[in-house]
Length: 68
Image (cartoon, rainbow, N blue to C red; front, top):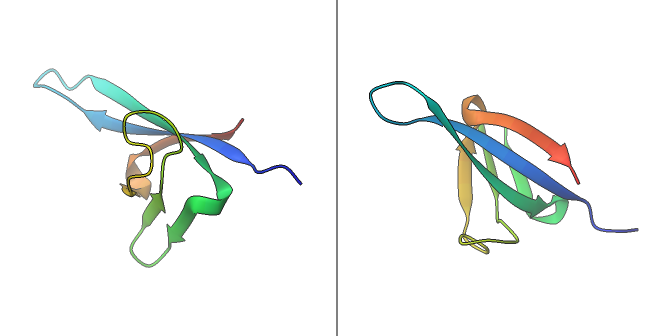
């Protein structure tokens, strides 16, 4: 079975104008951990500038998660 990959996009506000900027990462189902009690998603991006570095995203900051 092929490894499932996902794009995770987060939402964050920048500047005083309140406009949203989106960050996105590609990760694998093997490196995603859901922390239900803490309301966080923990994962390691597979590509890009932050590849291999642990990321914590609060559920409230997750904008989109979709399978590639």
